[in-house]
Amino acid sequence: MGRIPEETLEKVKKINIIDYAMNNGYEIRRIGSQFKIKDFGGLFIDAEGEKWNRFSDDSKEAGGGIIQFVKYMDQLDFRKAVEKLIDYASLERPPNQEAIAHIKAAKQVKKEPGVFKVPNRAQNYRRVFAYLTKTRQIDAEIVQYYVKHRKIYQDDHNNCVFCGGDEKGKVRSASLRGTYDVPGKDPFKGLVPNSDKLYPFTYEGKSNRVMVFEAPIDMLSYQSIKKEFGLHSDCQDHYIALNGVAHIGLAHYLESHPDINRVVFCLDNDEPGVKNTAELLNSIEEKYPQKYEFDLKVPTNKDWNQDLRLIHEAKELAKNQEWEEVVELEA
Image 1 (cartoon, one colour):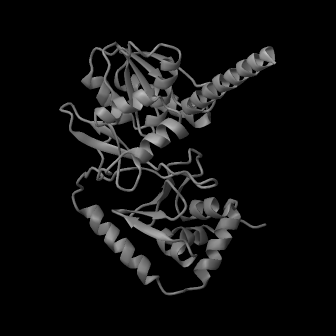
Image 2 (cartoon, helix red, strand yellow; image 1 turned 30 degrees about the vertical axis):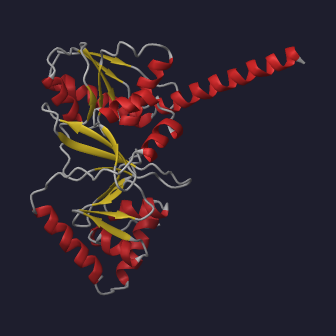
Image 3 (cartoon, rainbow, N blue to C red; image 1 turned 30 degrees about the horizontal axis):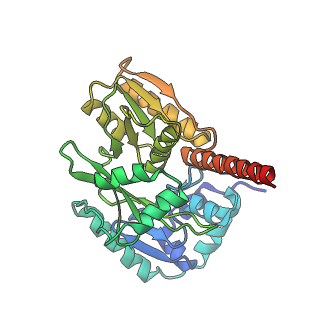
């Protein structure tokens, strides 16, 4: 099988992702200066239609240009993806006018100075409470604490909103998490446009130690586990959830809290988690040589929420066994 000529590859790489996606039946929705594809949560395409990324997928294949897009969406190897794009280009169809209009609008938004706007609040937070305390099994008092301090709320689309505030308490960033998971589909996740990544979701403690997590639900789950074992009443540590692994959020928090000299990484127990931990540690050590002590706390399972739910399952199983023993004794 011969090698694909370089000029053919270059031609294929110029195919616009938005144009290709719309011509192949994907339902595209523009959100500000980016695009989303229906039923593919966390997948974003840039304003030019040249690059894409799926933030809900930690694999290295979840991003790139048009070739990587076809590989990912159609589960093809590199050669078959290129061959499919060669066939697509050979049709010489006229440009998709709807795609052109979408791209033009997205580029215009990108040029305009971005303004961060906090999502509208829902009239009640029932969906968020149910999702966090029932589905995710996070401790209700912990959820109530963050709601009371206006760091968690429900927006008018029933998403859970996790807020990050600046030194004066003003909300400067917000991450969203859908509260309704559909089996077989990725959940809705995202960062509100123009969020300032210097200010992620945090809990301000009083000790010299900060606990670092990938996402707010990981952080809340860890705090719930501590409470399960009676270790949360004197919550002195600082906590920070980086909305992924945004290094600048951690660096800014450390600069804003000079008393901190210990950094504990509590990221996921999988290959991306190990990689992200190493990158975070190296970035902080490079920026502040020998200033911090580093430590790791790794969940037993993939993440802290899985650990929390399994702890609850084990406790429930133990209760049922105790009840069965009582019934047998009374029989």
